[in-house]
Image 1 (cartoon, one colour):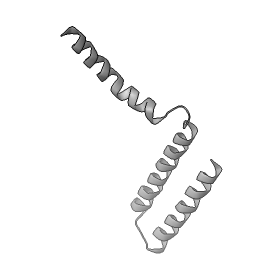
Image 2 (cartoon, rainbow, N blue to C red):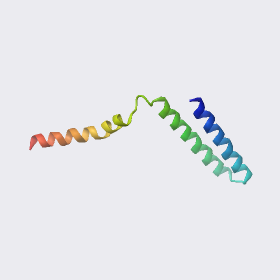
Image 3 (cartoon, one colour):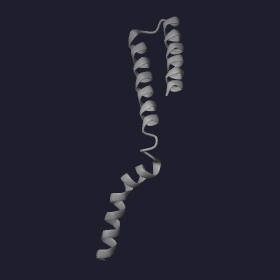
Image 4 (cartoon, helix red, strand yellow):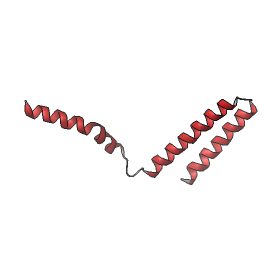
Length: 77
């Protein structure tokens, strides 16, 4: 987790420096900073829950009810 924070911190610093050097508007700076914060939080959440939320669990959650509905229909016919 620490490496992720260091990488995002370095990228945020480079982006901020670039934006200041090229005289970007405060709105642009807020958009870039907000995007970096949101992406950082998403990566940290994914890292934190990487063992609990797997791709197979996601697929079962999405398509499980559809499969049950389809199998129930086929049994009724």
